[in-house]
Length: 239
Ligand code: TMP
Image (cartoon, rainbow, N blue to C red; front, side):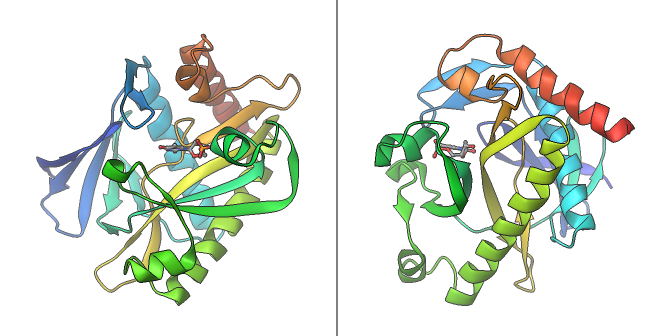
């Protein structure tokens, strides 16, 4: 597949056309932003780690029957994916209270939920990604009720699969954000990325944060945290 012109540049990735209209190439950058782009920085090596983790997760999910955009890793930073039209929803699954949930509802970080919580935000930077429910998504024409139900089902299945994987690595999957897209025939598949940028990952033994919160909150050892996630991932894959 031939890499053609850039069609999009996001905060952490670039997307390129290919010579086949059904496929794109994503390229992961080391750039990091937080608070809707207000905070900016670089996490050296992040692009390589995010590309690798995302591809490992998507491969695992595909094996377990969740359709994803993943096609083939091309090199350290670039992956061939199926072209989708992104549904402007941030689908967040939480197993443990943290971040905006803790702030919004006054619950201490680390409180373990009895069952996972799925929440949706409207992916719209100008509006600050406001929280929304199924009815809001319908009113905005983002998805049908059946599609919202399917997305929720996939999100919970993904949570179960990824919790199992990270548990075997000594990592607690606290929460994560997903994005879904539509193929030309309307089929909904998982898209975007799954990485330490989009997940909260805590060392189960020590409670240490090994994700982008180290950058968001100026906790230091940001590169080391990403490298540790990469190390656990590779160790798991060698087994
Ligand atoms: P939150 O607690 O800040 O709402 O974040 C929930 C999860 O979503 C967390 O794992 C980080 C991830 N996330 C993103 O991937 N992108 C974002 O823009 C935000 C705010 C969170």
